[in-house]
Length: 264
Image 1 (cartoon, rainbow, N blue to C red):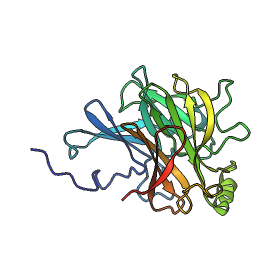
Image 2 (image 1 turned 120 degrees about the vertical axis):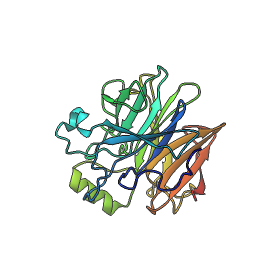
Image 3 (image 1 turned 180 degrees about the vertical axis):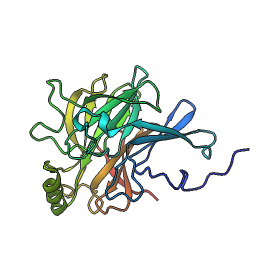
């Protein structure tokens, strides 16, 4: 007989915020950033994974460390932190872990043959000419990726960040990167899961450009997450209020999202 499941569902010594649940095979896997007990910053630990049988969500299993911050070649000393990730299964059956490092305006991807790793660095997300997404003039700040492999195999990558000007300037002062952003954007990737096929375009507005959009007062801040149920796409995000998750829906993965409310 299965035990009844309670919240918090993970042990109280574990800190995995920004959780992204995905069903692969007969198990539900949880990916997220990884806070450190008594840490002085967010996301100080390496990525771990937990999983449970889909028919018994009280039976969580620790899968261990699946990716270390110093595996990224831009972070060999491990000083940069791993922010909120997402995982998708590619057409070839491999699993792809998308993430952003602190102090870099880029999304990177690691790959594994199994959903619980271990993952190995593959590439930054780049344009066909090799330029890193985030480094071309007009590119938006790359942060908190979400990824969707649609039913037809098309790969969509969602990223973005938008917060008040004062905080943007403080982050720029601390990290020496350009954090200007106008909300969430979406790019289409090639089947290789790492090369931009269709350049970024706006998806959901931030505080700078929300007038007349229907998102006023609950504009996009961070934490892109994407799901598809039947023929509807659900884009979940953290609003500028900073204490809630909102959602928008569309019949298309890359346009026409409308604000629908706050998740309760």
